[in-house]
Length: 597
Ligand SMILES: Cc1cc2nc3c(=O)[nH]c(=O)nc-3n(C[C@H](O)[C@H](O)[C@H](O)COP(=O)(O)OP(=O)(O)OC[C@H]3O[C@@H](n4cnc5c(N)ncnc54)[C@H](O)[C@@H]3O)c2cc1C
Image: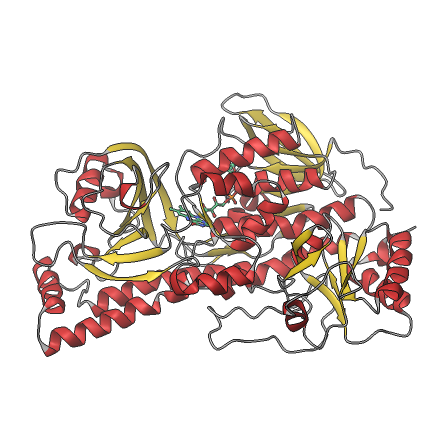
């Protein structure tokens, strides 16, 4: 410990240059850590994959200097905040070309104000095939020469105090061995968990999903300019959704999008999923446009599964992103959680590597992130079941023949009491999918119950709807509530007052002096930066509309916030000896018992 240099070639080796690995490279470079990325492909991913970047992710991207570029490349704010269910886009049958229902999504429509109030950052929508190159560009600018593409990591050996990695140019025989103090496994689940013997727990091979990235003119068929994601339910879906269509821009969006991702679901092992001609024919059939000209750019397969690694730390290797948890994209949480995993880990690695925190701080990566990521896995699998509810309400079942399925859809359209009842049931089933598309509390409200924090015994705040209602709180483990304050340079979010890699102690103007003295003592002892932020008329920033006072709550006279914006500790009143209290809290949060000096 004590900040001595270890003999390894680098401080952190990152296996995989996807969104998790590249984000880790940028965050660690910002913290002055010698981190290198090894990616086996020659380029970043060319597949569409993720596209929805929630507000917590965009807060992190803002702190990395990436958000501006993401917003510039995303579609205009107003034209992608809806999800719709359809029987098809067109077709000759009476039941074809019908909208089954739609919902506002990702902070649109009636959700707009509550999403906007919850964070200084906006939701963004940028397909991963455009995001990953952007992250690579930023990583290469931030840490030139540290991102190695065409490098296949073949083996990892823990050596007690450092890790050895065998790395070869992709496709060639000769591997070179390098050493790192720590390794971040951001390999998407392809290598490290297997090599390290970490079990992935949960159901696998639920469906074989095929995504076709294509250019097609759907402007005369896709009739809702607000819809980003179309789900199709028809008798071929066997009682659930048959597939989906997602607008991909890149320059025009909505109905005039030029590029699209078409997703089709197949039973695991169905050889039809591999037949390229059949895939195109089935896509046209699902859309109800048999002669649609399409230029297919790429076809990819992904497994519909719901697995979480039993442990996120294996010795000196940390599993993040898809290497630690994989689930269906229903909820749009995979890439977001990958970025949030890395944000949780980076500051901890930096403090431990600089000898300012004990190695046990790194154990809190698992303690904190595992419950959140495991919840996301189960939530995403549950969300996928929402489409089944719509299909069942529409009279669809795997036991029906195709003709029976269409007859059930005709019934839903019928001007009769039965038709009316079916329409009401379908509308209710569509509405229940708001757990996926208005899930503000899932996206912003995740909190840590144990870890690098000191619980204060207060109960977790709860709204009426546990998935949708986000209740900002300064309870330890929760994310710092966002409030706009007014400082010397104008409007600033509470989040922006937390220094990169350091802590912030929010308090009131009257108590500022006592806490500044306490912080100075703590900084001198630990070497960890602590900015005291006095909020009030005579403080560093003013809370003109009282939002911060309301959100911080009466239990919080002083709130200590970690570099990743989660609250580590709070006190109700000014203690008799603030230095001793703050020093004791930091020692415990940073696991400094085993730090000497
Ligand atoms: C259709 C679809 C839609 C999605 N939509 C969303 C969404 O809207 N929002 C969201 O948050 N998530 C979404 N996701 C999930 C998201 O794509 C993943 O969660 C995300 O890519 C995980 O990032 P990662 O960096 O952990 O892993 P990956 O993106 O898989 O990257 C891993 C990298 O490691 C490299 N690698 C593997 N093995 C080695 C090795 N031995 N040596 C060197 N390099 C190696 C790989 O080549 C790869 O580049 C979606 C996924 C799909 C399939």
